[in-house]
Picture 1 (cartoon, helix red, strand yellow):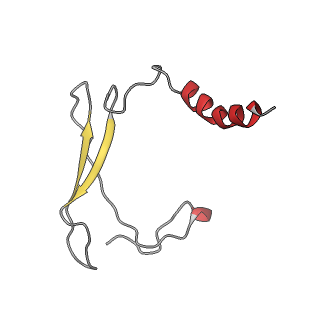
Picture 2 (cartoon, rainbow, N blue to C red; picture 1 turned 180 degrees about the vertical axis):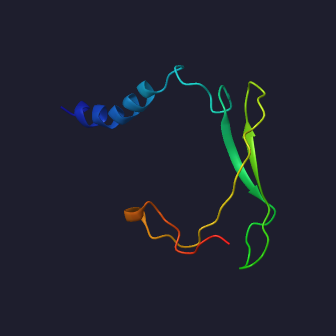
Picture 3 (cartoon, rainbow, N blue to C red; picture 1 turned 90 degrees about the horizontal axis):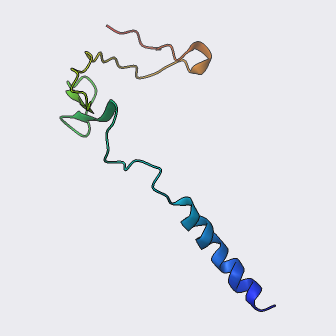
Length: 90
């Protein structure tokens, strides 16, 4: 009966090891279009400042990325109205 606690202690390890397998592609493999990051020229900003943002993407087929359109909504009405912007764009 003393072996039961030891076996129960090994059970989470056995479950974790059984979940690992070669069926998943490594995260470094890009086999379809992937948005990698959005980089800005400054990590923070102040109101009325100009901030430059750039899309960093990867496409293994070498296609040109689609044009990027940016918009900013500082306050929205929420999900009840499909996140309509409280402040209209100028």
